[in-house]
Image (cartoon, rainbow, N blue to C red):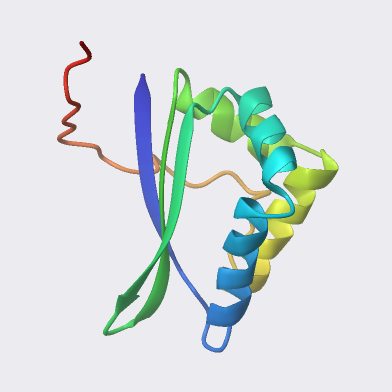
Length: 117
């Protein structure tokens, strides 16, 4: 399994929109979110908002068997839910997820997982 993490600064005045987006993912759009994640072969994705002295950030963790493949598929996706998702992120952060990120998403240096029994 591969892991990726990234952070995106939330634009000034957009924190309520960012929180509403995450509430929609956990509420009325949860089924569409699950369908998208399954199509992209993402096995886990966690979105959080971190308050820092420089403002608020989206902090995102995800795992998949093929992170570059999942990211590439998502970047190129024209699926209506994926387009909505990318628009919500762009509105909150100014970052266009239709454009592949330059370089690696993160340099994961340590991962602990409890052994399965």
